[in-house]
Every structure is written in C-alpha cells, then in structure tokens.
Image (cartoon, rainbow, N blue to C red):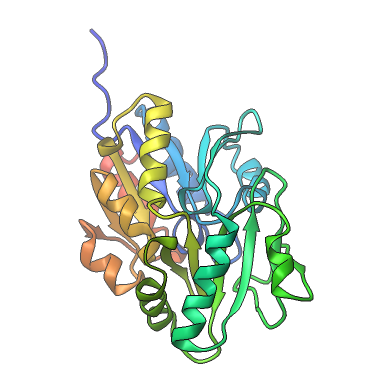
Length: 271
C-alpha cells in the first residue's frame, strides 16, 4: 500500500528573522525539525529576499541542495547544481525614474542595488548603510554607477522616515514602474513589477511538480505576505511585523526560540 503524501508537501521558509537566528545560524532543534518534515515527504524551500551570492554559504552549511527563491522572487536558483534556473531583472531606466519619483515626494534617499547573476555584487551609493553589516557590498562614488550592470532590485533608505512610511510613500510614487516591498529593518526595496515571494514560490512549486497551496510558509515581514497568499498555510513569527501577524493563519515563537521547529514538530509528528 502506497504512503499518502504529506498534508504539506513544501515547507517554505524565509531566512532572516525566521529560519536564521541573529548570528545567521540554524539551531540544532530546527535542523532536526526540518529533517523530520523531510522524512514525512515534505521538501524544504528557502524563499528569501537575499540575492544568490548572499545565501550560498548559508545553504552549504545547511547541506541544502534544492531550488531556492532569492531576491524577493526575482531569482530561482538550483543550489545542487549551482545554476540559475530563472531570473527577472528590473529595468534600470525604470528603476532610476522610480527613485526620482520617490525623491520628488519625500526628499533625498540613499540607494543600493543587487546585481543579477550568481556572482552579482551589491553596490551601495554614498550615504547608504547596510542593514546587515556582514553582507558583502561595494561602495560607489555616485548613483549612476549603480546602473553599470543588470540589477534584480533596488534597496532604499530615508534619513528620517520610518520603513513603513517610506514603503507607503514609495508605492504611491512609483506606480507600475516597480513593486515595493518592506523586508526588514531599514530595508525597503523596489523589484520588477508583479514579482514577489508569492510568484517565486509558485514558480518553485511548479519546478518541483507540487501545488503551491500545499506549502506551509513561515515569515516575519510584509514581503512575506505574497508568499502567505500563495501558500496553503501561513505562519508568522512571534515578533513579526503587525501586518504579517494579522494575515497569518497562526503565530509561532520567535526565530530565537525555535518557532519554525515548534510548528513542524506538531505538524509532522515529533520524534
């Protein structure tokens, strides 16, 4: 008699603030819970705002060999083969115009870009401060240098506005030039219009031959909202953004307290 498929064929996890602890590690308990889900037949799918170069070391440490949704859904990468399956770039003329529209509404901002490709660089213009100092970046002398190669997204910071205020102003300013996401403290981003973690999850599910609605998804920030809508069940971390908590099917403990493991142990049967 064949074994029935698991209720959740995919375990889709954000990285920062969700699967990873503050020191960029995954706890032994969470590793064991992911292994428990795998034994039940579920695939782990990383869905992150980080570009491919910012996750390869982490994935190697997890012995993760499957597809990865990176760059807020702009990249689908195969960690097993090291090849890019699909990428969507942000038109650089549109991106520059979008920044101009934002600045016309809220005053000067500081910008950075994530370049396309498995070895794409993160470029930051003068005044931009990385929200994660450990991430590699190359400083430029002027904004025009940000557009020297194809990009997947633009990161924007404002000297006074909160992230929520900046994200709201950016959405009203850019229209269909780009999609706007808020993915973490000090991280408001512009990406190709219509591309998000939800579209990335759907593409990865198709690549794996499963239904995206079979996914149980874990996240902590508003950029995870599209992923929750695409998945069958959304789980917000305890300290998640209020908008994500309101949209979640349930709320678990924080990333520091093994919130992902807590749910997986319940869903797949603790051993």
